[in-house]
Image 1 (tube, protein in one colour):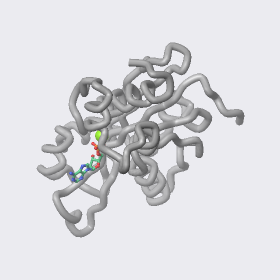
Image 2 (cartoon, rainbow, N blue to C red):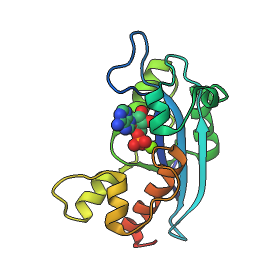
Image 3 (cartoon, rainbow, N blue to C red):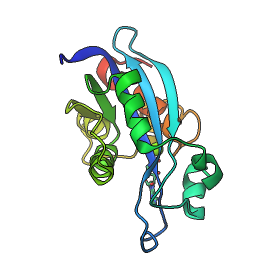
Length: 183
Ligand code: AMP
Ligand code: MG
């Protein structure tokens, strides 16, 4: 299938987490996939989405709710990881489009979970690491977090940090600024 350059799909995941190690028998799983669709023609974010996923190998800890605001009741209403990957492919054409995320974490977690769940990896190999790109463009000695990158660009952080949809939207703005000096 040919590569499509009509959009960049920005992804930010949230996953079950704990202050230290997971309780025995549990493992970190994706509970939210935040999506921001970036349009290279208008050079702007044009769509935001959040897919909630019901975890099956772990529970939402108080620590996780404090970090993400997501509760067990909320994610219990979510869909399966398999269904979420199907939406990425069918609705957002992630198996043909370039995608982006902040750092390596989202990509690594997707690869790990796809393997562990026996689900086909929904993305192309065309991945933009916005965190590395930001540090290189600004000649920084080391990479910085998303909130700090926004601050350095004088772009206000919109929404709730550590919610996938809002994080993806803010990362979309950083990428847009880096690629086209937009925003
Ligand atoms: P973020 O995109 O920065 O909201 O982080 C994505 C995921 O990384 C979160 O949903 C957590 O699973 C994990 N994470 C982020 N920050 C922390 C932290 N301080 N302690 C433990 N896990 C974290
Ligand atoms: Mg996030």
